[in-house]
Image (cartoon, rainbow, N blue to C red; front, side, top):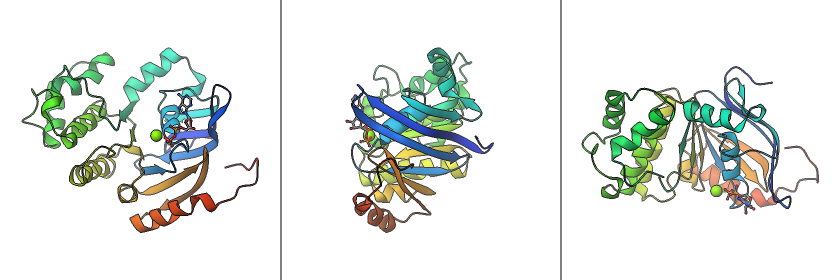
Length: 250
Ligand code: ADP
Ligand code: MG
């Protein structure tokens, strides 16, 4: 059952590619409204696949995905796309800004795609809050990596989505820019009440979250609340030690 206060819930999520590669092998997890969760695990453990399936960017092979009260897995691709455009923000490692559009045009785009009125004042207010008020008419190529990622976060926020998924959002940033973006994501949760689910391989980045979910071989391999970078690094180092009986339920 989906709890009322879950922004996202996945049940027994499985994803196989070509019937041979098992990316997700029965993952059940819930992300409560107003929480910041980091997802960690070795390369290839299924982190990106989990995010893509939970965000409605990809379909699981089996299992269920709930966003708010809506079961994404029970609806059509067209309906999922429409729902996603209204209710989900996504931040990618490589920003995914459109190079031919200005900063402001990039941020306005989700409103246009969702068929909403373009509220330029709101877009400018968000960009101003993120320290980009004087870059509205610049093309992305004129911005630093950290600034580009802040534009991407602004774009993810503009529709006031129930949940923002971020896949290695600081993976391409220097330390200072990474700190800025992480502080911003934390404020998105704790000051604006949004829900953020962030994949990262960096224990320091994970320590910005309220809790950490660990994946190994497409299965849940534990969780950590109020994580410190040291505790996360320690847990990561021992992920491989956990021997699971075959067929165990995560
Ligand atoms: P992570 O983000 O933790 O590095 P992924 O979710 O990207 O892991 O990948 C999980 C597994 O699924 C890996 O073995 C990967 O090679 C495989 N995989 C991911 N995407 C595809 C795809 N489009 N086609 C085939 N295999 C894929
Ligand atoms: Mg990945």
